[in-house]
Amino acid sequence: MVPGSEGLSALGGVGPGGAAPSRFPIPSRAQLLYCAAMVTREEILVLGLTAGVVGSLVGGLMLGIGLGLVINGAHAGWLLVLPAAPAAGGLGLLLARKLARKLNPG
Image (cartoon, rainbow, N blue to C red; front, side):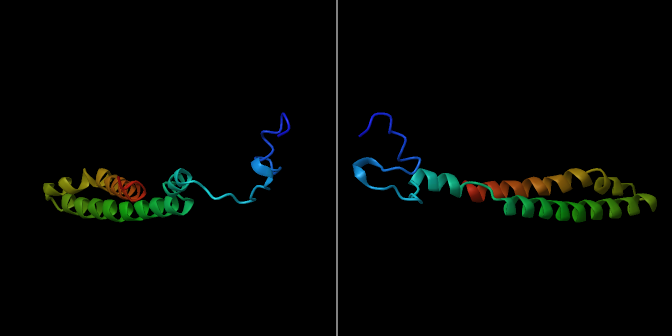
């Protein structure tokens, strides 16, 4: 081996033993596990859209029904109005945890 040519195999030169390196090396098991645990752009987009739509529907429904009850004099409607926003956000949190569990089953 020529002194100073240690990095040639990584740059596309001749590798150890005189064999030309592959242009597409086979990834190791650790690299495959790392790639499998990455969140894709699609999953983030679907999570955001799903959390937004479901949260809006549930929170809006709780808010609408609760305010309707309060306006008609039933003070029990406040039990629906006050937790409307946290309930909507909690659904997004549950969806995010579901995605994290799917990516890391251990």
